[in-house]
Length: 530
Image 1 (cartoon, one colour):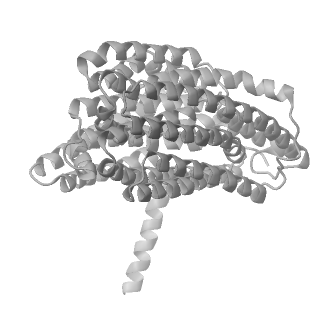
Image 2 (cartoon, rainbow, N blue to C red):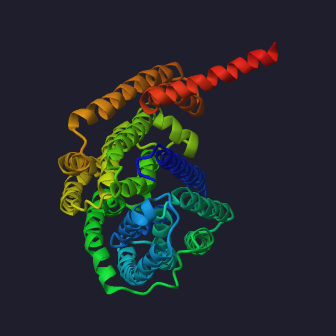
Image 3 (tube, rainbow, N blue to C red):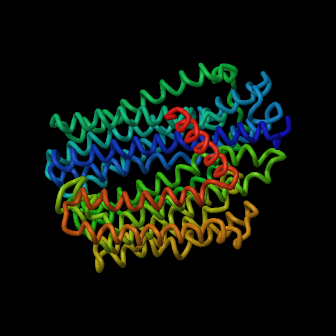
């Protein structure tokens, strides 16, 4: 069966659609429960303790980026081999290929153990030194130190869990691993919410996070054994040669991630240093809304990247560009809609969510929206380019990160919280914001004129239409409460989104199919009524 056969193409398309749906579901569930946890944190924790928790938890998330790029590289390597194995990704694994996968798992496991131990210990020591500089009172300092210790152990476990995520996703089980992650994240967030309402503090929150990482590890291993029984982690052996082929692209990825951390994950440290941890919550509230919108938009790329890797190693490489263009339309369209909503109703959303007094202002929200719109485009194209093992972005990301830090030192003292966010936006525009799209489109063989015509122009039209409809809705509901105003703007944007989905996402064949099914369903109803 050829990789370009209609049957196989249909199967891959269904798997991509299922993976995207699962990824969106997992992101939406995690975001929704995170939004439930935030009001509990704001209402139950003292402001200083809340600021410390946001600082520690975000630092813990940052540790997951320090896996030397191994998770991404292993996932891609499994996807390459799955695409090459037995005639294509839809065929069963042979014993020979299963043994090759087992050897890759065994090598990865040794590498992950070393990375997890090293990152955990270094982060623990550095974190304790940083906590000592915050000027906290003695009880809060001790609680923060213990919570950070637990977070470091927890994130070391989460780092090593990257092996099982890479294996399962690389073999094509993108939807199941996304749903599994969503389930464990949901349980963790629900437990943290309950503990906060019951009066728990930093240590309890950190301990629940660690328990969630352990549970995910056990569930992932069980899933792999039940669904890919031919792939045994115990039958493989460490291979130095295999490790060297993994570490070369992984280290390039790692340098890229260091730049990404400097670019997008340093804001809280400048706020804590120039102001104090109590200013972090108001900044974090607006950032969370914009960043969550970007996560939802980028999810389509996270799901489709696996299939780009598989197609890249087959005779069906010509299907990569259409897949990328459609994914970009969806992802950028979603972010454009979210940007319009946050600009016209961001204050109402935060007031309805956290209560009055937590909105940091339109200038900061507008800066976040612009920053994350650029971030969404570069992240999607970056992921698609990287899916072909095009690891060329370390230098530009390091330059962007260094520029962000330098600009933050200059802008934070003069412009306050807006200056911290503006530094990231300007650093992106000067570096990654234009260079990543240029190199990625060249790698994927997509001309700029095609990208502008099929992605940027329709997304801009969608943004203008959504902004106009939400501006009218906001004006008509200016004197009502925050929740009705937020719902009115979301409803107006939703109508535009439906029209945009119909015109931008569905192609001619899918629109004809949808109309045909609607006519048949309507015709059956008429017959039944008669």
